[in-house]
Image 1 (spheres, helix red, strand yellow):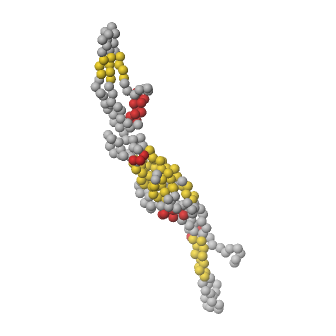
Image 2: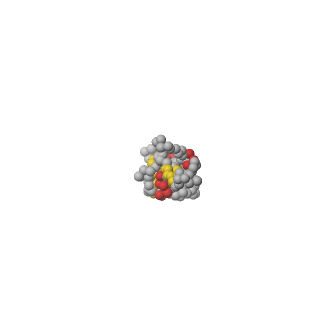
Image 3: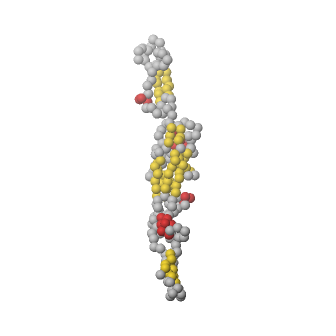
Length: 219
């Protein structure tokens, strides 16, 4: 007896069949035909099986997500609402890219520093202000969700953690003095009398750590 197997042509059926199934695609139905050798090579007969549908279970593979960050510079003209924090790339074996949903995960954008727009994470006004004030932008997470597949339960997700790339500038401290009027021969005009009250500040350095002194031998 000779048996011919009709399945995926040109390549071994096991290779292509395995790839088809592992790509999340259904295997096609098939038929088998068996042919005898006849009697003395005559009266050859064949028999064909009924159409057979392979029994298989599809698994909904998790989608993929990655983010390439863009370096943002404090106080630069480009550091404003709409500046690109990172570019998102997503993929999935079963779900088209256009049908994959991307959002912020686990409340990681609770301060509203970011928004997702046209496949990118961009700064909001609050995010730009945070950088330009010399303050740290927090890390955030993005979650991508697929639509599921027929025959499988639920949807699949994947999460990416993103650390924004920011180049900070050491801003100059500020100083101002409000003078006090001193009166000649007044009882209060003595050592320790207040000439002026100093106010200092800095975006990056705590007031307690700022050092104030007389400049250019002015005292």
